[in-house]
Image 1 (spheres, rainbow, N blue to C red):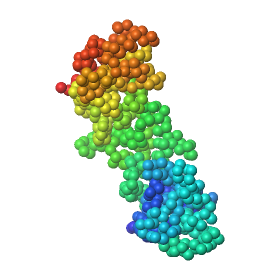
Image 2 (image 1 turned 180 degrees about the vertical axis):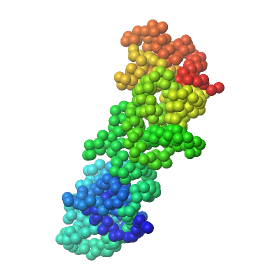
Image 3 (image 1 turned 90 degrees about the vertical axis):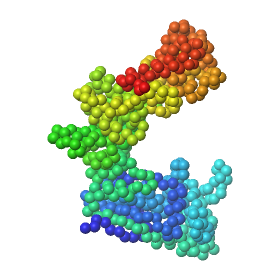
Image 4 (image 1 turned 60 degrees about the vertical axis):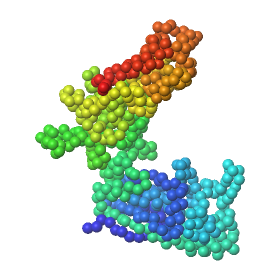
Length: 595
């Protein structure tokens, strides 16, 4: 038995039902995102009676129950009955047409660059009568006050602020397209000599809108929620692709659960969102909804896997731990309800772990993608993560991922493997996790590491800070200065100007080996001087007054050979610091660097 009908409906009828709130949106649908150019193109297509695509509607009252909301820009009339139909496909087109043709307020849209604007749309009747390609030129988008200005607002180019001015200049408001009786009466009063031109416009353009038939596929009440969600995924592949969070939101909405509210919060419904709570930890401000769902999926599938193993299943019949899209989409609401709080707590523990590793701000976080497996593991371990043996294993795994640069792309399989491997390794000292086994750090990598955006570069910088690097000027560790929000950055140890003058190639002096975090004050005093000069200058500063031994201790905290530095011996400095950084990496990863 067919669960849908295919038909055509007059556009004015559909828009009328939208304004009366008989047709609404399921709440999981995205907001309206069309820009001014899309609006113009749609209006021209209908004016020329071109097809604009099919819309898909769902009858309410069946198994698939959703929270609903009116189309953007519509205020349901008091006493309006419940929605009879929901828009599954065609939201952007129907919202555009509703706002432009069926409401009186300015249309909320945006420029091609994404800047929000409010516009009223008009037809220049005389240009529109030329037809064809001139129709697009005939559409005028006017500011909210209906006055078009130029020369930074000093010159008025077009004033349509009253109905009389519209009539006298033959600019027809699009909001009158569906019913133009009032405007026609005004035209008879203010510019009767132009009524003949208007009637040509009415026949050529307005009637195209009033008689336009929109293809409609209507799903019946008998359509299951699974079918609705599948259809929703399939039809929403154009424009901005739906991410997995939006698709799961659609699935859970069919069970009466609003995932968007659960994640983002909703002040109107007095719902506190998980993301808001996570963002109280600055390190977690980069966590995305998909990361959270991946963590939930990994805990859910891990539970299923353990149950399969316990029941004697083997081989491919055992559920794999998974963070893949297909597993997330298949995850039932009951699994989310069971694990979401645990995962939230796991992310908060992940922030604590990272702070202990001296990763204290989002800009220092090498990989956001490592947060989901870390949160999943910590959700299982809870307070046990602070046990020294467990903590050391977590640290080795974390830095192996960072310094081995293993979390850059295609990580869905890796993060799932890591959750299972790490927990097994922690509990039984079995085979080490694949990420630790796969991680390799070649000393030669230091000779090419110049981008401060790379994960390994960020990781090395954090490790230097973790060693207790002190500022060259302020009497404090760099981490302490960072906490006090003093201006810090990563600067050259042998200054760039000095290196250029002494024939050292940029490819060498610009690597991480010749860089370290210091304060703006210290960097300003370093300038372009040779190290022997700037060290003496720093020591002699009236507010510093350090002995050679004291200054050497500060410089040494950055893993710098002070003898080579004071001798302005770049080659010896570079060789010694490179060796020191390699040892630092080896301690962090818990394994030797590769040959």
